[in-house]
Image (cartoon, rainbow, N blue to C red):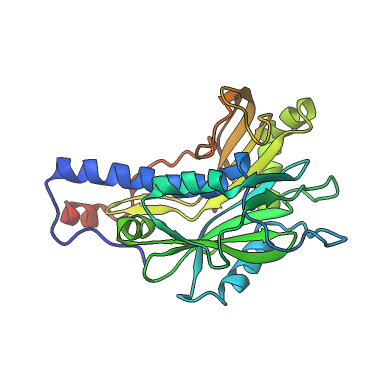
Length: 293
């Protein structure tokens, strides 16, 4: 599903200019989904449940995968997913999301029609470590369309699909999750031990995000699966020009080990999670790399 190196490679300098923007665009896709805590994400159903379902990554991925089974164009396989854990529910108009989707150069289709408002339910204090009321997943198919599914209070819903010739190549660079990705309870616990718990003790009402990306492969270069954990005091929705405190951590997707972590300040704007390191590395053996070059 992930394209290999081009059969007719351009000169080396030209290829470098080509794959760097491609990686950047792929990260924008993740940012639109995983970083949308400032605008909210569509939530269909689950709001009237007397006992909200707080799911960990493996449970939410399974729920999203099952929900995607009824969407035409499948089978669909998850390439990234993220939880948004808020102390209070938020509601925003869909116009904010539509403007963000425009930067992907993809054609969005809303299977159930574009709703007037977007929402994220609150995650209560009874949620276990690594569990949240709201998850969102990006799943790709064989034609490199991207389906965005939410899991809200345990209910999966197809939100929108991104497709079109202008973005299918970029979506093709996203790798689906391999076997052995560490689950969110272990990831969040490790991040908390690396400074996250101290941050939350000082800022108990923070917005909390954690998510994983299956990886990116662009020609001979790749990005391994990674987890990010980010806590921020930025209000939801954000205010123009506002700044807040932030803790972020990057962890190996299959090792669960901390790659980096830090605490500092941040501009309260919608961007890719700062906990992602997204370091490129050769995706092939040295012999294959020489042949590709």
